[in-house]
Image (tube, rainbow over all chains, first blue to last red; front, side, top):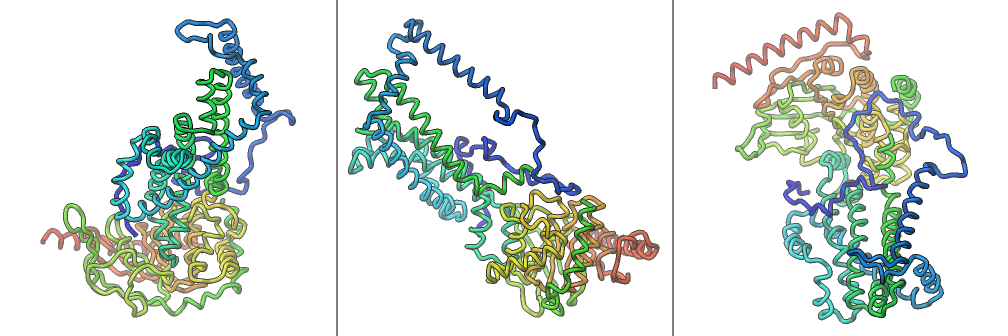
Length: 310
Length: 288
């Protein structure tokens, strides 16, 4: 196996610190000798009313903050405030709400969502498979890293949006070009985070595995991959965010369907309430997808959570 | 933790019949002949171990004692197969060491358990790698966990265990392959004094069952005297073996030995000898 100095630092945006919500870093360095762990897993009970969620008072504040914003939006748009920001053309929340209910019974609304979701699924799926494979290859082999890294370093700074003209020229269909752009967006954070995770493989654990008779493949499967997983999962979550960003750019510029196209055509067709509906749907779908990624990966990181709790 | 451990440790005696320590006994003869270990560094070659010669008989408990950086861990790593000697001969049961292998079990200082595997799966890893089926590996793991008194923690993740417990899992994991040699690299170095003494007693009890060869690296002279049949003393830069002291203390040994006059006497002899040899090695260095 190759032991490499950490000569390569992935871009800061790709190496998300794992402290974001459910991906927490485990500190394995503190010595816990002398603790009695018989009560491991016990959470101090908090006195609360059973039918209310814990921290309900804080959720109430958060809800109130949102309601306040919606009310402010309503007031400025109803009164057509125009002071630097112009609200004459901004539909008020009631109009948007009414239009949303309309859209819910329109078939094309769902078709737009379906198209976007399909593109995300294909592009993201490809990015996950290719990104993790490349990342492992680069993390484990100095030669592979030397071959692949220049491409990544050159292509990564080019935003997905900048690829659109070339993608349209090169790809057989509009959908293919949008999928390509989305794929590119998701690929880089996944590759870089996988490399980062793989390169952090603990030498002691590799030695331990070797002295227990593990082959190279077994070390990859039992030591390298699980060890890199927290970093990979962070990359997957970032990748999903970038994938949505790139998808939207593609759909706005060159789509015929998709929620990005829906939002942009609402502007060109002067159907302003649909702009805001499009925006909110994009936000909701993006969050939903990132949530799915995190929840889908969390069983794989159970060891980390339990370790952190102890 | 102390109370839990002593309670669980009775399991050691109850489970004697369930494993087969004889599989590894009678083997584990280590010969080092004029071994040099050299590392290439930026400032040129660095000799970590120079001209080390040592015969270790099957079933002997050897402590490698010396100050930090004297090359004792490096010497052990060469027996483990992680470090290749520049010159000299390194044989285990007459075979030259070519790389790491499950016949030489290794216990590391700390943080060497796979954090994503349960305690049981950690111990089962070696047997699994040797091609034993899942079921067999799991039952071996349970047996060896009971040997170190940690049956109750089979399904826990390592990070939820105390440092001492983690090291016992490490010992169980290394033994589950029935190694002819057990290599221990300051395994109790990160533990507090009370836990350490208990772990030492524990280790001797387990070793009493297996009687395999143990090579134990430490910089703690009390630990070396308490545990070993022989103490091999090393001096620093370059790492040389400067003394080989036989510890004539009867076995089985228990913690009360640590305060006995016999122990003190032997420790005093060791210290005097180490001092003498260290000074001599130092003078030799200066003459060069």
